[in-house]
Every structure is written in C-alpha cells, then in structure tokens.
Image (cartoon, rainbow, N blue to C red):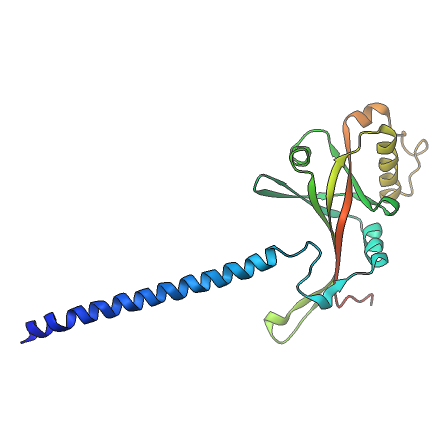
Length: 212
C-alpha cells in the first residue's frame, strides 16, 4: 500500500518543487531586472544631477570660492576600465573657468591623460561629525565641489611659466622668486608637465556646514 501511495504522490511532490523553484527563479530574475533598471536610471543621469537636492549648491560664486581657497584636490582619470585617483596641488583660473596643476612629463598620470583626457576633479573640506541616536543617521559637515572636463598639456612655455608662478604664489606666498629662490628656468619647464582642465560642468554640495 505504501509503495502504491509513493508512486501516486511522488509525481505531485516533484511537480510542486519544480513549480516552487520556477517561481523563485522568476522572482529573482524580476528583482534583478528592477535593480538593473534602477542602476541604469542613475547611471544615465547628467553629470551635474544630484540625488539629494537639498544638499546641492548652484551658486557659482560659492563654487569658485571653494575652488580658489582650497589647498588640495583629488584628480580622477581612467585607463581602459581601470580608474585612478591622484592628489594634486592646483590653481583655479576664474577668467578661464579652468583648473591647472603640474606633474611629471612621464608616468602613469601622463599616460592616462594621453589616452583619455576626460577627467573629474574634487575639492572638499570637512567639519564636525554630526552624531545621532541611530547609527544610520550619523552625518558629517562638509563642503565639496566636483568639476568635470577635459585636461590638456599646456604647450606654450610662457603660459606654463605663468601657471607655475601662480602655484608658487598660492602655496608659498611668503617667498619671492629672485630673492628667496631662483626663478623658473627654461630647462625646468622641459621636465615639468603643466595641465589645464577646461571645465564643462561642476556640482557644489554641502551638508549642514558651520563656521563655528
């Protein structure tokens, strides 16, 4: 009798588990499609589009002040599918809406920019930790600007010299060329790469920043 019951019910049990597995796979596939759709939606957004609208800063004077006054930046480049970030000293040229920095004539950064001059550069400054009773609600005071554009090697020696002099003035204003150090020499320009990023678009962002 038991053997007969097994033969009778086993096909139904097998069909049930197959149906359950098919439903689970369908649900997982649906969830994956929804997740991909969500990621694709955000990936297709404009570079200056921001998820948290309340943190966005569109005031160009605010953005330019942060770019002018900040002491360091992080430059993002790519080579094929590999991203790179490089800390740089920089100067912001307001009249040209451009960011300039210097580096070596050869190396990873130079190669990355040669093959793909499209870059992003970020400057940020941070304030207090904003604590909360709930761990997920912790936050941080910050101000930040991210600029997107195209980097190019400055080929004109006089322009490169002027940019380097502005870098000296920004980072060592207490030192005078010809008095405290030798002015930039022609041979030094041959070994120094000066880059200019022409900015296409930028985003400003801040979180509860306070000067107190």
